[in-house]
Image (cartoon, rainbow, N blue to C red; front, side, top):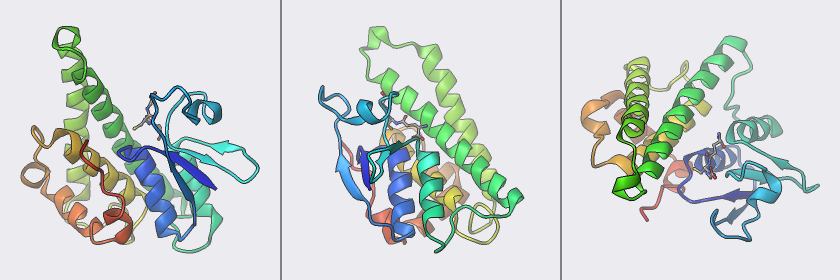
Length: 204
Ligand SMILES: N[C@@H](CCC(=O)N[C@@H](CS)C(=O)NCC(=O)O)C(=O)O
């Protein structure tokens, strides 16, 4: 199996962490999405990473589909619970964490435009989603060690990848440690895991 990814994609990081936690060997192939020969569009019509290419050259996307596929590939250390309520809870945490990433990516892309081309209303609308999402995740976590129940799960991985991305792109305007202390505590627990420290975003 081969994963097409970019190093700072929070969605691709989620998949890389799931594979590492499940001890599943995947060949990692970094791609440049703007490269005219980039293979991603061939495997995913949406042109987005991550894409997992299977042995028969079939492909899987997006990150949620790939994470579930990998989780079911081995019985070891399930990251998505079997119990229906716990499973929905994990998926909801993941949906919110991914949604914060979607909004953060939208702000980042808008801010990369020349100043005259930027739409301040668009930026405010999407930054509000980021801030509301962080607040809800911080409050829902409370003093708990993990997002759902008393076990590490895909919910923690999704939230951790979102925090890594927010720190990477918005540490000048969002202070996780001061404003979201429960998420900061979760993040420092997560960073003790090799799967997280091996996949840290790289400022570019
Ligand atoms: N919902 C998708 C989101 C994937 C996504 O937006 N990836 C970004 C990189 S962070 C991308 O490939 N963007 C390129 C594009 O939109 O053309 C997932 O979970 O995999």
